[in-house]
Amino acid sequence: MIKIGTALFEAAEQLEREKGISKDVLVSSLCDALVAAYKKHIRDKDAENVEAILDETTGEIGVFRTKVVVSEVENEDLEISLEDAKEIDEEVELDDEVKIEVTPENFGRIAAQSAKQVITQRIREAERKLVLDEFLSKKGTLITGIIQRKDDRNVIVNIGKTDAIMPSREQIPGEYYKPGNRIRVFVLDVKETSRLPQVIVSQAHPEIVRELFELEVPEIEDGIVEIKSIAREAGFRTKLAVWSNDPSVDSVGACIGPRGSRIQTIVGELKNEKIDIVRYSQDPVEYIVNALSPARIISVDILADDENRKEVFVIVPDDQLSLAIGREGQNVRLAHRLTGWKIDIKSETQARAMEDEREKQMLEEMKAQQEEQKADEDEVSGTTDEAVNDAVGEAADETVDETAEELQQVDTEENGTQEEQNEQVEVENA
Image (cartoon, rainbow, N blue to C red; front, side):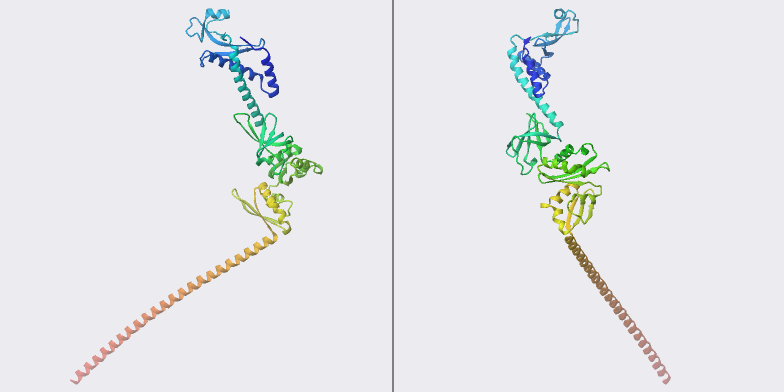
């Protein structure tokens, strides 16, 4: 047996307190390292029934080999005679298993070198697994961290057992991230790597708004008020659609809070980002009108409503057009993301002009159709007159021919009668 003392157990307990790595991980790592060193020592990596046993009471550890008690030994590595087994344990019988210590002399230094490498590797693996399990459970939630530094375009945030990365696309535009400041971040993703897991956090994700409202509004946490949809342009503006499952609870009022206390806390957390709380409705027209607030709406016409296309045409007063569209199209863009409908906005004047243009175009099309129809009728009429004239001409020609034949026949008959009369006169004269 090798004497290791109590220092190992004290180190294991300290490791468990500081990093949460169980003492059993360290003990099992030491035993595995000792077994690996023994197999290497005897130059038999495939040696069977070898294990290391640690006695926590005496602080000793040794290598043991399990052998089967037989009457006649054929394999000394796996079997032991009954006589030799009786020397270890008098109550042993045939076919029993006994553990025999096989720790080599002066094995402590070799074991220590091997154990150092194995224990270090096992501690890293255990630490990586703890961090991975912890932050996988926190994925999709808000956590608090401390800004460490800005590395190129990324912000490094310490979140406890590891440092998280906030990429530039997940940062609030124009925000200055000062090292040492505490910030709330949204755990976006956790990626397993060969070292510690890589945690990706965000301050620009729309779900961070949901988490903040759940923290500040008890009705949302209790399920009375439900967040239906979120559309956000981080650092500028957010639209939030809410719905109350209790008719007696005003969903918008619950989110705003008494004298705006709840919404002001959330706005402060988001660095004064503007938040529009919209009342959700199952009626798409009403929902779109609410989503375009604070602009006043005259009418909403649904142009298409199917799985492939959802589109509406909205008319607003002339003085409300810029408000409905928003700066650089922000208001209508957020309303589109919030509702899922494509929104085409026009002012009254623009809509009237479009209607006049449409009527003008329709009149021109009708006029063109009438002219085309008249041309077709004229063509048909001309074709009919020509056919009639041809038919009349042919009939007249036939009539003339028939009349000529009849006259010729009459002349022939008259000539024949005259000849008969002349012959009769000649006969009488004779």
